[in-house]
Length: 475
Image (cartoon, rainbow, N blue to C red; front, side):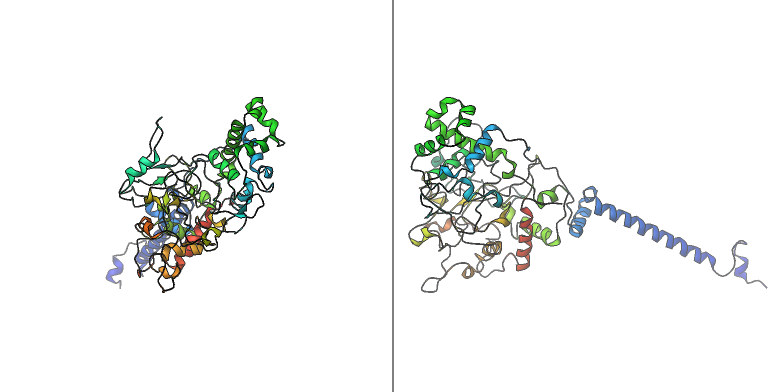
């Protein structure tokens, strides 16, 4: 006798619930198909994060360290050096142009050390007998090819009228200081010094910068420009001056010096080793390298306006037209770094290096709102440096980051105490100029006793990222 339910089954299906097994098979095949599709999509996203929606790209970036938005960087074109640049190269390495006969431009700006010093001395020795101590550590000569002349306030544009720096500075006095974050427009006019060369911006061009060490008594120590010209006439490459600039150059000392310094500037501009853009970060920007989790987290903190906020001054993004970032806004900041007792000049308690307002430039000496301000240097190749800040007070990046993190929240860990036990905050700047020190931008916006902006683990990750800024990366 047939069961009623059996009679209801199609004749081609056996009894026992085969339809349920068919549905299970269909569901299994569907799940497998979905899983396969997800796997293919995930693999595609991992390989081509730049083709994914922003949210997916960000996830892939966190997982793999790949840049989900690669760009093409417009580097300076690598071409053979011109005759003028080749002449400048010889001058750059020529020790005969110094009073000691042993010092050249390359002595303090070593090509093997990112055109900075090849040692960890706080300042370099020079002078006629190589026993005179300098006042500041030589900055790197790399990535200066886009440095604008010194100015104050917004771009002056094309004008034939000479700029009166004192007048501009006076106009800027009392203007609200712009808060600095890289990815946001300033809330107030950026009426601050910017551009120029040296720590205080007193030279406008590489040509102007090149003559400074030649005449500095604690560096190459020539007594006068005529002394430099006389030595140039005695070089083995003097005939190249005649060939390039004409035979009359040898009888015109001022023109000879001017053209020699121009040649040095051309060497620094044309030789790609001064602006190589071959770091791991450059490769990452172009989608050719992947950052580790520590490096990627460090980059995120570096850019975070509420955390490290490094990118507020050390710009990390390519320009809109594809120029690689040089990791400086070329502006000037008063950071209040502690005094360095290792500097010979600082043995005099009345000596203060106040950057833009003196003592080595005098045109803005009366514009006291700039006292304590120094040029923001590039962070490219920063991990290769042995000393940091204008007074070489720190010797590793951990000390530098601790300064930023603890200067306001725990100043007793940064500055010495006086005889009464009081912390001597901003002790390398006269008290009357302490108001110039930046307390508005993160991480300096914290108050005494606040939680620091960064943990020790954060700092280690930021340092890991900064190491990706060293040139010479190989995929």
